[in-house]
Image (cartoon, rainbow, N blue to C red; front, side):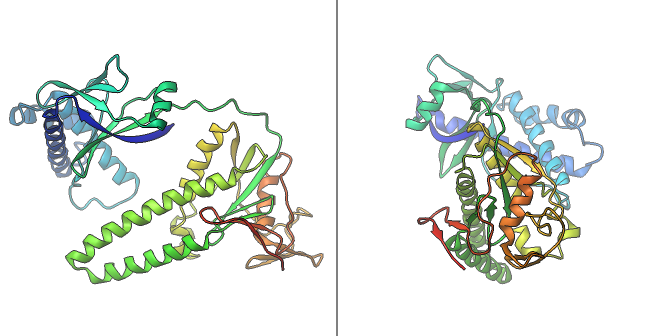
Length: 379
């Protein structure tokens, strides 16, 4: 699956306001449903109970709003509370929807013979809207199908988010495995000897984190407004960096990528160790991006147990030797790079032939995902 955003404009320019008006009504309905559900979370915990309490009263007060928009508002409200509950957040007040957005389905929109023109429901019947095209979108529209797009408003302009069902290439037969050890300073270490580090990104992120702490301690209205912008900037930088790192990892002839199963690494029992550092590394997002990119290239991604990968000597396969920072001191007296040693152990657990580089300390190849050429450093 791959998603691209583009603008949409009404064939009749006056219809843009009708669609924006519908989105504003839908936002109000979601907030009204949120207040109702918050008043009795236990009783209104399913769609049937919420629908019985909300739908008929809303249809009387919002007669111009299509019935399907009322139903979509109920579903969005229920889904939001389920997400809050699953994320273990405290529900102390009704959640409030601020943005203007709506997920379309076959009851709300339909397609026309022209694939760049769609028919969307508004406060005054259905209207035609044109999808603004560009070269990459043309290529996707010609080769793939999209489903249930999302429309939203940004800077008073209408946008549509199209998700395409990009069918991956036929996967190759598993023949060579690349182990990847994920970390904080070294975001990824590969068993073939590559160390993926971006000092510039780490420096920028430290600045953003410091600025966020300063704004949080201030607490003024302008500080909160600035803090919102900083959070958005940090989130976008992290997303971009995740894709760059995934692209660097996949620059290999190996067609199996082995990762540690780090589920629960950020749970309470792990928070004593590197609490702040671990919480800021998007391990799951990197795994998600790496998985779908690998599938599109015909490669496989597998998960292995992370137990003792940093304490086992990858040459002997025994739990012997000592790790100290970035070095692993084996009982034979040879010093390895600790992260490459761990990456090789991860690759071994996949039970496939290993793509292995020089694990001696100081012989890794450093790849900078954003900036410059790769560097090789020697001890």
